[in-house]
Each structure stands twice: as structure tokens, then as C-alpha cells.
Image 1: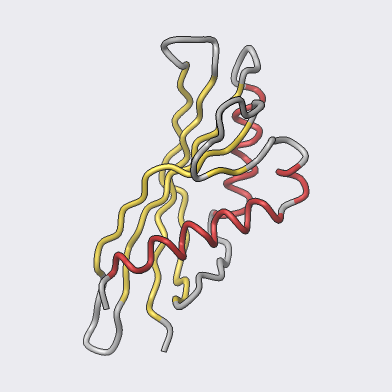
Image 2: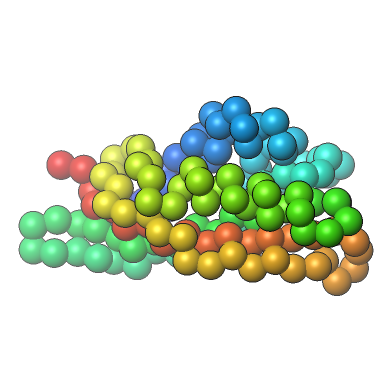
Length: 136
């Protein structure tokens, strides 16, 4: 089974998990794959993902990464980093139901706060490593 098959269900599972959290929902205008024009800040955008095979003789597996982007118009990093903390709370070392796959582990890899070069926007990118196996 191609390991690229995990990316779409993985993205959907992450988005569903984030949208279901009441605390996060109270802080952001949404969680988007494609951000609609004019969306109010702050919000979370699902960014790039990678997937590499991690197969064994008896199973198909994948080591994937998903990057989530927090965007904020708050002057300073307080708001964006607070939202990033929610992403870590929800994903780092937590279970995740991914259709057709068993989640082995989720680990936070990196958080990078950035100032948007063309505006006063704040941007925090959070990358997660996610190991999965194809469900039997």
C-alpha cells in the first residue's frame, strides 16, 4: 500500500481533532486547509506534510510530518504562542484516530515563531512527527 495514502486521512484527523476542542475554538476563527480570503485573525492553517515509508515484513507503516501554522494580528507573540501551546496539548504524545491507520506515536518536533516580513502579523509554525501503521 502506498504510504502517500496516509496524508489525506491524517490531515482530516488533525483538523477534526482541532475543531472539536472547545478551548482552541474559543481562541481562533477556524482551522483551515485553504484559508478563505478575509478570514479574521487568529486562525490555524494546515501546512505542508511529508510521508516516508516505514514498512516491516508484516505491516505497512509511515513516518509523516504535519506542520500547523498559527497566524495572529496581535502585536507581539503572546496570542500566537498561546494558541501554539494548545496545538501541543492536543497532539504531542496524544492518541489520534486516523481512518484506515493505527497511530503509533505523535511527537512535537519544532515550534518556530516568525514575524511576517510584509506586515505586523505573527506566525508560529509547529511541526509534528506522526508514526502510523495501516489497519488490518
